[in-house]
Amino acid sequence: MDPTVLGSLLLAVVISFLLIYSTWDKLYRKRNLPPGPTPLPVIGNLLQIKRGEMVKSLMEMGSNYGPVFTFYFGQRPIVILSGYRAVKEALIDQGEDFSGRGKMPSVDKIFDGFGVVFSNGERWKQLRRFSLTTLRNFGMGKRSIEERIQEEAQCLLEAIRKYDRKPVDPRNILAQAVSNVICSVVFGNRFEYKDLKFLKLINLFNETFVLMSSTWGQLQEMIPNIMDYVPGPHQKINPIIERLLEFVAERVKMNEATLDPTSPRDYIDCFITKMQKENENPTSEFNLRNLLLTVLNLFFAGTETVSTTLRHGFLILIKHKEIQEKLHKEIDTVIGQNRSPNIEDRSKMPYMDAVIHEIQRFSDVIPLNVPHTVIRDTTFRGFTIPKGTDVYPLLCTVLRDPSQFRTPDQFNPNHFLDESGGFKKSDAFMPFSTGKRICLGEGLARMELFLFLTTILQNFTLTSETQFKESDIAPRMTGFANVPIEYQMSFIPRMA
Image 1 (cartoon, rainbow, N blue to C red):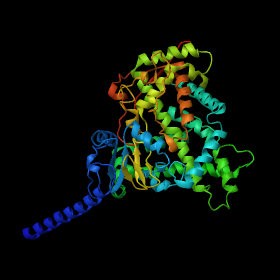
Image 2 (cartoon, rainbow, N blue to C red):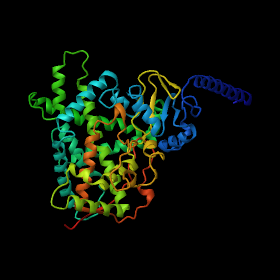
Image 3 (spheres, one colour):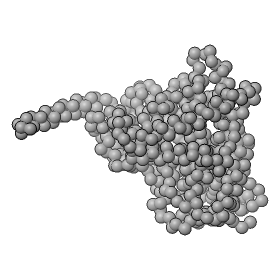
Image 4 (cartoon, rainbow, N blue to C red):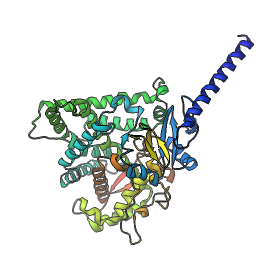
């Protein structure tokens, strides 16, 4: 090509870019959004994210721009809330304004605003109200769900004993045990640990968690218009969710074929009955799509978050043997070896309660939170957030806020203990988020963590041939979820 023509072409490209950038920059600065790094056209603030470290990068930006700043995912402005006070002001003090569910491009193609987790407006209100009532009717927060967890804990003990002290990756067996509790409520039955179809589903959950948290998953969240056309592991997320939905659809068909509206067996039965009652109500949100996607929401959330927290907890207790020994002593004193733990024991076991809270705080399983959106034009700390703007209230910055926790980056149960050794609450303890969008299953998760962990420690000492370092137990702080490193451990029976 003629050098003159090439030079003219390059000059035209540079001038075009400068004009686009200038126009973009003026539009960007006209808004009364919170401050933040200046975005580029198309890719937004992508270049401000260290490769594969979205969470760490956003945390660092909070130090530079303050507790409320704007960050562009492609051309979408996202308001980031950093630290306990900013998150509390938004989700509690102005909870209604911030009560919408934001976009998650990695899963939005399938959920598309349906299901209790990803819906908004009247749909969300109907589904959440129904789900809370139905889960409560099936024992959530009551004695009956406690008994289900206790029974599952005994099944878990049996399965662990079969390992006979041999090293094992605890991921599958913990996920199966935890999942069986929510399965008993949603599907009306538990699954045997040797059920290969069930194990395959559990592995799909974990794979989704890992993919969404990977560098590819982070790019999918930030620049979906580009990543939709780029081959890579992130393209597996939707096919995996489709396979999980197929399983849920099979279960729904089984329930429909054997339904007795006067005697509901599980959550699905109750939803189908509600659908039949409201089939002529044009404003009803009780339809097959919401049923399938809400059941998948409950199934996924009720499996992966608690089992991932337990895996973090085992790793921490193997590293900190002195903490495990103190827990063994407290269990022996309060419960002994002749009966199973029950939820009433928790109030008499401040050290166990503090350790579980600290495991949740330190492992920080969902560091970015699930995105929110403002449901109306909102004034917040002097800034204007237009209706429909997505908001990320960073749970990681709340759980690691130095004004709330003395040693935020270290595992320290004393964060939840007073001077006399009693359990001490913290308003900044928000692993389940807070406000109107707080996790539906908070009560169930807290009960599971206490009963599963206490039952296992009552019967076993947790060990590993690997000498773990502090960096091994620290959460990765990369994308959507903090998944612990893969590790092998042994369960050594304790002598009665």
